[in-house]
Length: 226
Image 1 (cartoon, rainbow, N blue to C red):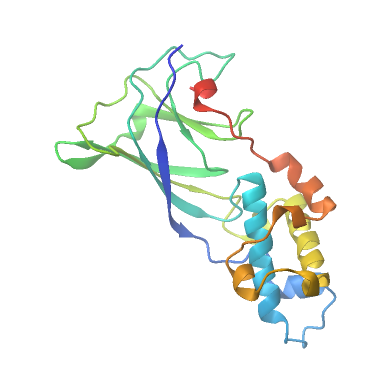
Image 2 (cartoon, rainbow, N blue to C red):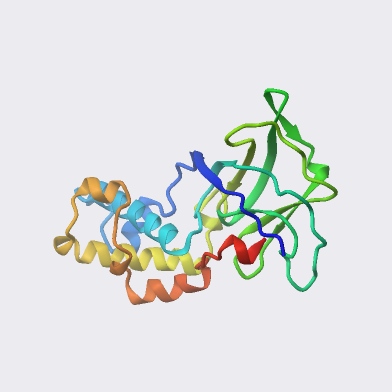
């Protein structure tokens, strides 16, 4: 069986600035009086750290992220699709999740990037890997020589608003936030570290790990996918 040796580099063009948990909701969960404001900045940073840890732990984006994938090529050929094994054909895998929308695909031809009509390809989401796959309806285009001749623009996330995040995830975030806040004196990290979302996944409370487990995406080698 042919394998897909395509490699894609992902660039984040934009990320939704909205918080996955509002300061007011966080303070209510932590039983902090709304008029007590001295820890507000720290709580905001801890919310960001909890969100970043979830995304690193599960490989899924909470709120909208807009990406561009720069890929080394299109697949060489289209193989017959199997209803038993989704990827018994050449495809491109989007290794970001959950996919909300694939906006458009460009490829390099005659010294410029041109848009590939969306009627010429299909996007399949789901399966055991929880990633998405692009496959040609008929044939893949042929590109001119370029280090990254294929560009894929898409966005991910559970929604545009924090209310669209599944309840188990929101509960896990609250549990993680509470653990960080309760043990803030023991945290071996400064506020800059928290602001950048660098926080050990080992620090996740057991409840958060349990709630996040159904959302974890386990990486699978391209050799076994396409």
